[in-house]
Structures are given as structure tokens and as C-alpha cells.
Image (tube, rainbow, N blue to C red; front, side):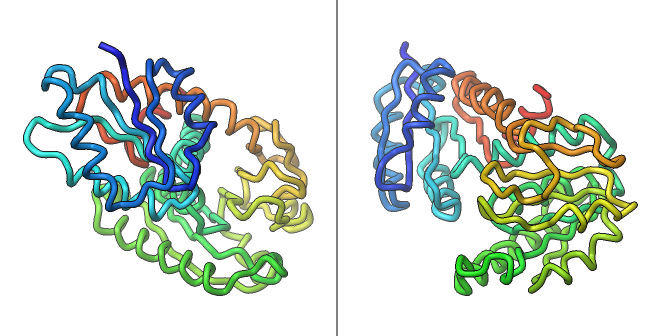
Length: 304
């Protein structure tokens, strides 16, 4: 029985990256669909699992991707709503690589230090930053997540997008407080800040600093963090010059600078590929696995 992965991408063209990774992870066939909207999901899911008997449904799975994470969440919801009784298939959500990227970084950090009770600052409330914040809080951190100062974004600043992103982050923080993750004692607080000076003013407290802003935006010069004695761990998701935190190199894998241990984008991206492939392999072990943020993170912690 061939292992068939159904690639459901919200972008016009299904990601060639995701398709290649799926084949490399052992899928025999990848059925790729681009421009998928929530209204399309039910038909695609139902027509797939009606082709096989219940014992063989584990040989079918769906990977939800695309650049719009909010749409990806809706696609996942609609896919789950299409299930009934024993008729279901395993699903993975990794729109824009948000779940595998955030899970890899925080799993690596959790492997280095006990996170419970630590203060963390995440700059950038986008999909990766928000998921990193949720995972840190789930490990027991007290997390402050802030907007990227508009003055740093300059002409790239989009007031509407910034407002929607903050709203989504506050909603995610509320969902965290109401969920089982909060039992570890962590918390998430979302703030809007306008300037680099304001950002530098809140660097005296956190032990962990995570830069998750847009590609090619320098959020913190070296002078901003090098003399902050509380900071012990720095993570930068940005691979595009200029990097988010000046002084970090993309290949840094907890290299030590001025007593701080730092993690760069390449040191996250390489193991992320391993985790992504492992997730796809897991999809074909059963027919009821849901790999959302929490599910992907569990696999990342097993492998790192």
C-alpha cells in the first residue's frame, strides 16, 4: 500500500520545498494542491479516505502549508471537521515553516537549560515568534512578547498588518491561559513598543532574548545587549543580512559571546529539516495523529 501525502497549500502554487521534503521523508506519492481555501478542504479529505478501508487509512496523510498561517489554521480546522467515526487521517500544520522552526529552536534551548521560572523576551509577534512564546511559556517561562518597533521597520511598516498581528498574539495569549499548557506555571504578556530606546529599556530583566522579526531587519545592535547582565541566552531566527541581533552569526550553535550563549538561524534550520522529515514519517504510523504546534514540539524534543 503506497504512502500518499496530500499537500494542501494556501498559496497559488504548492510549495516545491515542502513537496521535495515529503519525498525525502519517504512519501511514495505527493498529491500537491495550490490555492486551497477552507471551503475546498472537506471534499479533498473525504474523497481521499473513502478510497481505502479503515485499516489502511494510516497510509494517507495531509500536510497543510502555505505562507498564510491564519489560513493554515482554518484549513486544519476544516480538515478535522471532515472526520467522522473511524474515518480520519493524520494531519500536519506547518504553514510558513512556523511550527517546525519555533519547535526546533525552543527544543534546542530546553536541552541546554531548565526553562521553568525564567524570564523571556520575544521580539516579533509573527507566526514563529508567537509559537516560540507559547512553547517557552509551556516550559514554565514568564514571556513578554513585543511588536517590532515601527521606526526600525521604516518604509516596511504596515499599520494594518501590525494591528492584526498584535490582535492575533493577544488571542493566542488568552488561549494559552485557558489551555493545559499553562499548568507548567508559565505566562505570556503582549506589548506594543514604538522605538529602539523603548525596546532597550526592557532588556534589564529577561534571561532569554528571542529575535523573530521580519527578514533583513536589525532589531538590536550589539551595544543594546552586550552590557545587559541578566541576558544569558540569545536566539535569532533571521538568516538575511542584516541579522536581527548584531553580533550573532547564523551558524552559531550556542556559541559563547561575552558570557552569553547564542543560537543562529542556520543552527536552527539544519535540525529543523530533520524534524520536518521525522514528522512526515510519523504521519504514516497511525491515522489519527495531529501535528500542530504542540505535536511538532513533542517530536522535536524527542530528537534534540
